[in-house]
Length: 400
Image (cartoon, rainbow, N blue to C red; front, side, top):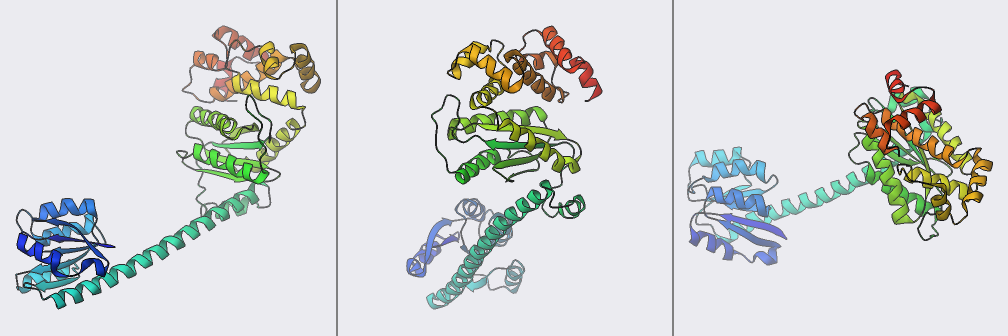
């Protein structure tokens, strides 16, 4: 139904217009009345009428000022002036303000019906056109998203040259500025930590993971999430706050485990050089592919350490209990598959996380120490230097 509002300072006129025609049969509903221009403007902003009868001579705010202000407040509302003023200047101003028609009181029902029917026809055509435009825009947006993903996929997998990317990336709204994060994700299917195993259709699981990841990155200036090949999912994001982005990635992984009941392999890298993305993608893919060949217990142990690395009291016995094996057996598996002890595995993960935090100049050293599971900043610095060959401060200064 079309919504009609009546603005006139005479109650008798408003009442008469309300009853003048069988509005319901014409597909019109009288939704509001107003006795002055100011009131009419306030009510119209709320009820959003499609059609409005306006008197010229009203208190507080006249009809012509009301019509002018309605163009900003309720664009698209058609105005029919119903006035007792038969002055050319009023009609001239009304034409300038694009009123639909100008009727003089007293209005004949047949004349009113003819004008309103013509207005309703225009409004209904506009609605149909708007729905068609919205439908076309929706189709175009869907197609644009698909084209954007195809473009990125071709570039990442090196089926598109860097020159081709440079030439067309602005068309796809991929104007990355400054540091860019490349995240690579691979689902582990039914493998879970402390969650019931679920059997997923691979395509449905991939779709669900992509949706969760997309929802995690709404405030990132530019980001794109897409399936690439062999079940890998990629997210490319402009980095404005590295610490916040790391937190988003951790929240994403936790959400997938919680809501989908599956675990994932994921890794990411930050680069200042956009042209490095294709080669970095292949490096990350090879790294995850190798990790995917590990025995399930070792793989899940790594995931557990990557999830709870920040806990200072994290121990081999606790992790072994979570994996439903004894500590000695788990220690042997780690040594066999990774060539490292439990402590070395945990330390490597903590140092990698610390490096991520060190890249954020706003993070203080004692904060980083605690975030990666070390209450003692001195012990953290000692361990970092043992692994990396330089202290955390020196590493930050070098900008490695």
